[in-house]
Length: 533
Image 1 (cartoon, rainbow, N blue to C red):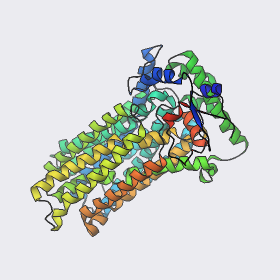
Image 2: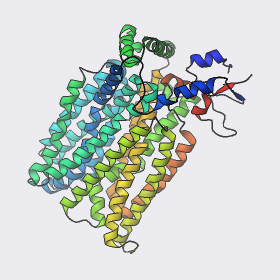
Image 3: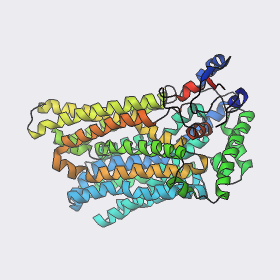
């Protein structure tokens, strides 16, 4: 591997390569430059030199692109309560309940897999529009479903739409965001998922007093409403400049970059970086190496990216967050709450907690970085899941926790679990998978990660009740706690810090092998280091 001189390092935005057995020295004057740049990474408060309009424009694009996530969140939240009334109205069995809840996550992998190719063909923006149309169709069928079979058909269509949406929104936002705020902005879809969950819980509580054959239909049908705003958004947001370059629409890409960057010079520099990355992609195409073939026969650097991206996506789900959200009424009933109204009120508290703490994550993700938040998140979840197991154990005759205390502890443990999830692994897994992959593979690789996420979610959702009957609800959460502990190890071993790096710089860093001997080299430290010959 060749050595980089000072000028080359500066041309790469002060992001030197990592390599084999090398020595490092401080670059004279770099400390002053580092101090001057320190304030730029403040989350949601970075300074743009030309116009505040650029900042507002990027925020608006991130918000509109995240609206599809409301659909996923609403479906998760509303189904947790609607299922109580669907059971009574349609007389479905417990196995049918598991299938109804979990099939959405499984079938959404079809949308995620198709989303990568679709977004490369028709663009990121119109893929989001397609996702909304498919989901809206499924929600309408569910609202008017006369039988369990019709309900499943609508659920399957909604799942395909959600698969499109959860895959493309983070990719689009990452491709239009400046490096200093990419983490915060790419977390917007997770904010809207949590907002959707909260709205679903509120809908459950608000409509629970209606007749049983009407209330759950209104709950599910209300999910169509966000599609109106998504239709409006498609006429406001621009196409991704990186996708435009891939389509050889350089003039259009330059126009978008001028709107989202602080100066014309910066826009031109960014355009040059994107064109260089796109040139690598075109070279790969000229060698007739298919994208999916490359993903399933990866180079060592791509393999490390896939382990990081797909691994964090799977850990996000197999630690049981969907079981906590989908089956929170069952958890609270097992803890000793008997009234449906009180159970649904407790779920509103869970949704409120989840939404508040995702906002905390947005404020911190570009300030203190991805990895510290992941540590806080995974360790906190491990403790809360273990406490939830203890809180539920009294139901099985152990007497570890008095019944009254058990109910309070269960509510606090569930709220604590969703809080720690929302402050770290919830949003950060989407941030990482949208920023670590090369441009030519980004859409498909992100889709692959989303597939792992959705399959893991479906397995948990479709097996939770059955497993709980075999080993108890408490025992199930002890297992989730153990898996969460493993996620702490995974973060330590495989997740690098990517705060403040451009997408092209992150790709470059993954392409070089980091020195494993003598400890981990953090990306932030490398900014002040230079190879010595």
